[in-house]
Image (cartoon, rainbow, N blue to C red):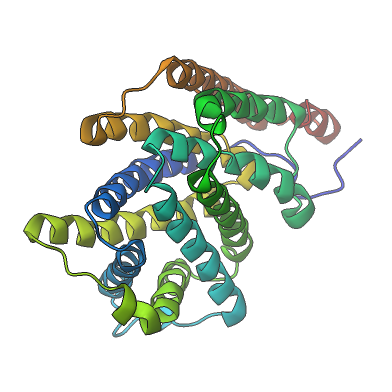
Length: 313
């Protein structure tokens, strides 16, 4: 009964979990700032271009691009570009969704991604989740449905944009996991930002808009910092752990989205948001419990047949 795949389900390192949670906090800053900017009248396309342009500059500085050749060295430039396209799609569709949706609702739809990622990680990457993780992720999915149920009563363009953002992000994550073993972290974070900047530059004269004051400039520039650092954390998380093992943890970002929605835009969470968040937290706590059991099992090192069976239960 031993697993035929060398990449069967494994315990997820705590460091990888913490990296994913930290990236979620940074992305909540990014989403809140982007929503504030587009609601103030700035073009979503221009906000996206600046976000990635600052991202590129930040990477050049942090990785000393003037002398770090590893940042430009790639094994597959087409895959690097395609990954950047998926990241661009995730960002632009998300910003457009935020024009009409509360942060919590947009984030809830966005977090259908773990289900898509987990479903595709098996056939595409050979990372098969055990049934216990599937159940826990499914419970988290139910929590997301509870949160967004009022929004689906009047399904609109904003929901469509949010779904497209979620699908783009799912493909971006899967490509990150696939390429992390062969591409350098510097090149992954650099080309994923450079591709959107190049693609959007020809349209910049039509989409550009000048921020009206220093506050708008500060928020606009900070988007690139939050996005660049957040994706750097994601890359290192997926170098340490499997996609299916990390899938439940980004659910925690819904808490930050709800908080920023209330503080900045007056979006008061309703009972559906509260109940859904409770379900999500409960599923996350079970995953933590399951990870602890897998870590203990890996330390005791039972025979391979019993170990493989335990991981699938």
